[in-house]
Image (cartoon, rainbow, N blue to C red; front, side):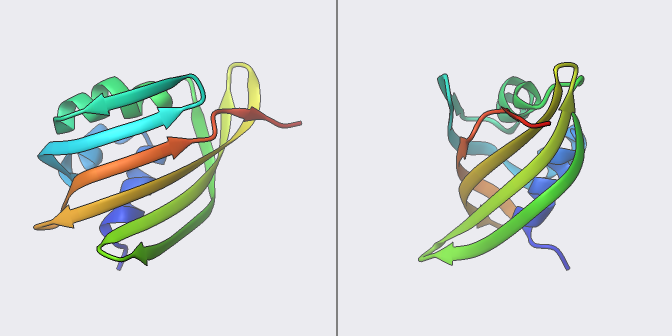
Length: 121
């Protein structure tokens, strides 16, 4: 059975808004960093609509989750994942690191850092 963190990665890769919302606490505490910007959200809908579905938009097709590793850092779960993504600009790799806390089966606290889209041949 997949953990909440693993289900989150797959829902994110599939652009599955309903599944993402179903994994997040309504008042999720989120902070994130991409190569050019810092991001914050304090609601599940804000995180999904204004951040996650912006990071991977409708034109970005995740071809495969290439790697997914998870472990514990004291009371927080760590998940690292790498995606193979096809965009209108070509093929890219994207890697993210996340730390999260789960309360009552929902992600209540989430910190993510993204490598950005790294173009590959």
